[in-house]
Length: 482
Picture 1: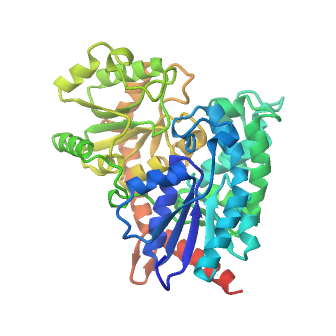
Picture 2 (picture 1 turned 180 degrees about the vertical axis):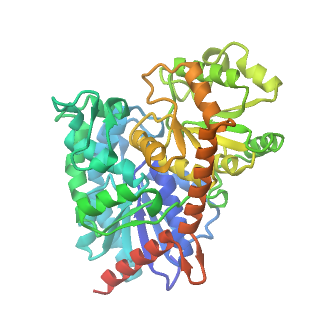
Picture 3 (picture 1 turned 180 degrees about the horizontal axis):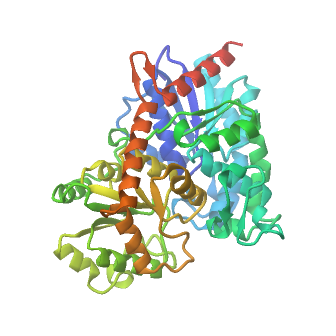
């Protein structure tokens, strides 16, 4: 720990979609002049050690004890990346057992440093962390890597199960978030749709979510002007300060996880394409679509004749950790044909997404609408074609379509049959020379400027997210001095 610098402790849930934004937060906090203690379970810390640059940074990676076998989990199931939903639930249900070792970790940190950390910032799945932190007289905040709107819808659905009321059929309102407008049953993840009062996730969240109001603050990786209704929901509901401090996104210099050969291949291919001519397709690091959906998406790409980069994973019905078999899951000859025509680039599992979205050749992003991906897209002025498949992604898509106006939705979930004609139509709507496409592109350019303004820190000008972060640390410092 750097001498004379105050320390901040951050503790994400064990999933890449949480660890990555927390790591971006850690780098931002480090740039503000603090040291950071980044806490996680042994396997995740080991992977972070392998991917982070040499230890010139003042981010200290610290293990918290966790044994998979103690919780009926297979070896190396410390991260949700490649485990099925039932094991995800088991991992989630095991997280309260981290309370005792986390208490010891804080005690050891204070003893070693001779002073308390400025604050502890933990994941929204760790509702218990606020009380543990307060035992040491330390300021506590929750950091959400989800949007305010998306998390508000998720929060309300999990606690109220409004879609199960007898008077509700296909459409319904959220009782404590009417500003969200009507929701449709197709916007409910299957795990929530079938959940009853005894569902493990419902039981977990009904214990976890009420503890959020014990925190001293809630910070979001979002922008005030982009996400106003969701942020207002939490200010009203929790009655604690809510600060939007985003977008916080990892740059390539922050992590060495990107393969240079893959990066070079993508950029070289994009350099040969015309401006705003390429569709980028990715469903994130943990999601995939069904085999029939994959087949119809490939057919739609054939019919559209648009250039594309498609990041593929094996379809839902198969082993998602298997190698991608183009001859089995794509139309016959498709992969070779688009290669020969130099029209498409098919990449297995991972692509340098930030660099792709930043390239002048990229016109649109067909996305699962995970919030990290949304922020990366909008920061670079790339409109979206939404295909949400899980969790709060459905509500992110709703926000982007209905309130922000930077997205069209092509499908919802993995259980619906999507016609190739519908996919082609949505691609052409966003990328084509039509009035709606022009409107979406203009609006996306405006949102890009909004995001840049929120993060601008020049002279006397402080953007909304910069001011929010300053107010957050001022509150934490004041609490420290009390």
